[in-house]
Every structure is written in C-alpha cells, then in structure tokens.
Length: 169
Image 1: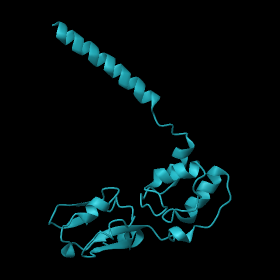
Image 2: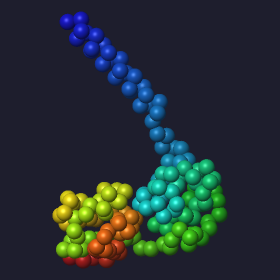
Image 3: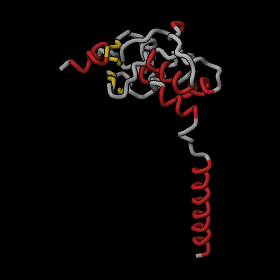
Image 4: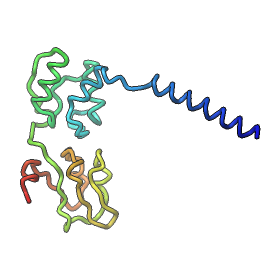
C-alpha cells in the first residue's frame, strides 16, 4: 500500500514538473524567428541553402542571410519579409532559383518500381507506398519542393502546376 502511495506522489510531482517545463520552454509566437518563419512558404525545399524554412528564418533574424533566397516564396515573400524587418525590397537572388507557379509532384504510377527513395526524400511525408509497390503523392500535403525527383531511378516523377491539376476532372 505504501508503494502505491509513493508511486502516485511521484507521478503527481513529475506531472507538475512537466507542466512547469512546458510553460518555461514554450515557443514564443511573438519572437522574430517565429514571425519570419510564418511568412516563409514551408516547402522545406532547401533551395535557400538551409535545410528548411525554420533554419532560414533563424539566419534571417540573425542577419546572416538576406531576405531574397526563397524561390518558392518569390517576390511576395521578399516583400513581406522586407516589411516585417523594415528593410528595402530586393529582387529574388537567381543563384537560389527562380520563382515558379505553385507545383506539386505527380508520380506516373505504372512506371514506379517501388524503390521508396522518393518517400525517404520527401520532407513533408507527402508520398505513400510500400517497397516494390507503386507510390503515389498526397497532393494536399505536397509542397512541390522537388526533392523527390533526383533520387528516382526511373524518372517517373513530374512536377505539375497546382492550378492545372485542380482544373482537371
């Protein structure tokens, strides 16, 4: 009986400690990094030279990266970042790519060999399938980052314009 009391007391103590820690380490949605990150397109494509949108946001906040390295966000994102940071709007840096319309990946399923390399490359888990079976893209989750294309050994992945895809029956 005493053992149960000790376990319950320990559980309450640890629960209170976890609750306090969650408040102590909570994200500050008003922080500059969070505001910058919210303006980025969340493609996680790494075209900016950083492994994702959050690391790029940190670099912008630290003034170690300019605001014009995000091709998926394009000029609209550069303008929004310039306004937030009270900086001049500068053209998108072509070294990191060019602005394109929103794209999504499309797997030509009859050609897919089920290698799973595209699944491993997708930063947002938008591709589903099993080894040696065809894969498909969950279009609502795809960010069009293009990271699934290079590892595909049979070149069965295309990027298509989001507006064209939605207009198809």
